[in-house]
Image 1 (cartoon, rainbow, N blue to C red):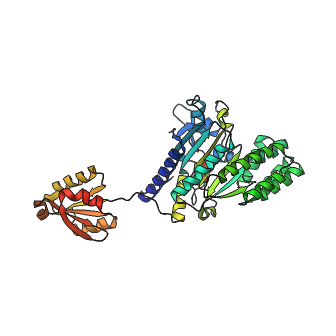
Image 2: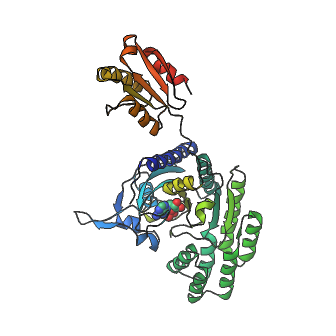
Image 3: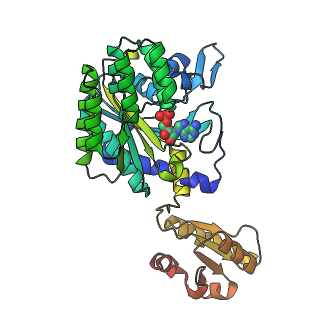
Length: 425
Ligand code: AMP
């Protein structure tokens, strides 16, 4: 679990704010769901990976509950129940902390933050393209311009395995291995499940089919799967999505990987992950998502096709550090008001309060330090201005405004203080 000290908390909230702004820009409405849900709900369709890593316990009424390990089941619950009659498409956003009993290591903790965008009610490729475009736009707005998106399609892999008569639960084993890049084991498992030689050859080719020359890669995929009809429909869907993305002016590099799978079992179509090279080396994605057309039904809702993405807020904050991307924070002018003696305290209070009412972030020297010490502390904390309240100036209704950066100071009338601070850059 994490303690976020001020610098880290600032960064986390900054990224969260960007995810919220992107939600607004694309018309996603925020929902807030509880941190605990019934175990059954959370476990229903998560992969083995996540199911085993949930924080599960019984409450005082002996109900089995768990800390949320992802947002999608909670959203699916909403859509199947309270939001059942809402017009489609339904575009929802949420952000908050998630809990998984992962092995803590660099970039991976048991408590982490995610934003979540879910687009429900349409199976058309433009919805998939919107989710990908939005992810690219978000990363760009944060300044992570050198990110790339790895895209695959579960429908291609499952289409092949279905045609081979391999059951869904057994397919999941293969997908888990592909997700972990254990390609040989994935092929061996398929072989043990009596997949044909053609199937094994096709899977092997797909595993090797990857790259950023999207036109060629898509062509190679078509070639590889020409004996598998439903896989062909899935590949056509991938074509359409990629075509739309190309028209959306996004700056991300696009990498197609035909043998790419993700840990969560509920994906049915396009899947993708976002990376920056600095973290990709450590195997850390900064976001991931895909299409899940069957999940809402599972929670008792109408059949509702859906696609979504979860950018990792902590991971993006880490990527900001690693890529030395500056935070685009609004110019702040933080002021400290320093009374030069105890008699000046009341005036200092009045002035500080006037500044705050004008929206200027303001501290008061609270330690009764001599002015030189108070000024060096203001320096250490990177404040922009000090306002010194001394008895001589006070008699004339004046104060001294000190610019902490260039160390210049001037004595001005109290009434001009706000204009002066606002005017200075
Ligand atoms: P997932 O919910 O597994 O699809 O993950 C989506 C994103 O959440 C990943 O791409 C990461 O950016 C982030 N994420 C997942 N697990 C962790 C973790 N244990 N610690 C930090 N970030 C994580």
